[in-house]
Image (tube, rainbow, N blue to C red):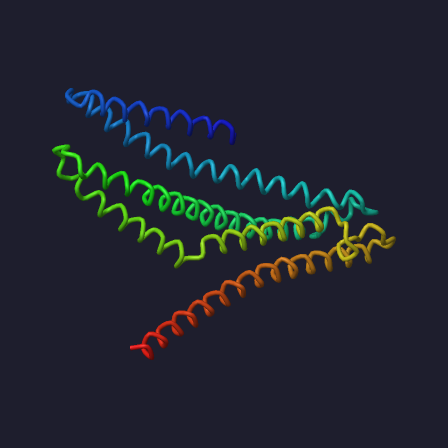
Length: 258
C-alpha cells in the first residue's frame, strides 16, 4: 500500500512538470494555458491529499512493526502464551510507540535544522562569490538597468543570510537532535532485545515474578526515555539563557563604551 501511494506521488510530480512545461512553452495558446493551470491545481491538490495518505500508511506500518517487536521478547519467556493474554504486550507496544514518536520528532527537527544550515551556508558562499563578477558586469554596457542593482542586492542578501546563520544555532540543534535520536534508538533496542539486566526478564522462573519484572522493565524504559528527552530540553533552555546573557552583556558594554 505504501509503495503504491509513493508511485502516485511520482505520477503526480510528472503531471506537475508536464503542465509547467506546457504553460511555459505554449503560453500563446490560451486553451493550453488554461488546461495546464487546471492540471497544476489538480496535481497539487491530489499531491497534498496523497501525502496525508502516505503519512497515515507509514504510521500504520510503523505501529505494526512496533507490535511485532513488543511480541518478540515474550517468545523468550516461560509461559509466554499466558503473558500474551494480559496487558504486558500492549504495554510494551505503547512504550515503544511513545519512544518512536519522540524519535520521529527529533528526526524531523534534525533534518530541518541540517537542511536550513546547509542551504543558508551555500547561499552565503554563492552570493559572496557572485558579487565580484556582478561588479564587472555592471561596468559593461549591457543596456539592462536591473543589472546595476545586483552588485548592491547580492552583498546585502549575503549579509542577511550570514546574520541568520549566526543568530540561530542550526548546527547545534542538528547535532543535539542527532545525538538524542541515537540515544533513544539505542535505548529502544535494549528494551526490545532485553540485553541489559534491567530489561532482562526471561531468566526468572516464576510466572508472577516474570510479569512483575516485565512491568518494571516497561516502567524503567519509559523513565529512561523521559530522562533522555528532558536532558535535551534542559540543554536547549540553557543555551537560550546563555544567549540572552550574552546579548545583555553586549548591550551593557555598548552603553558603557558610549
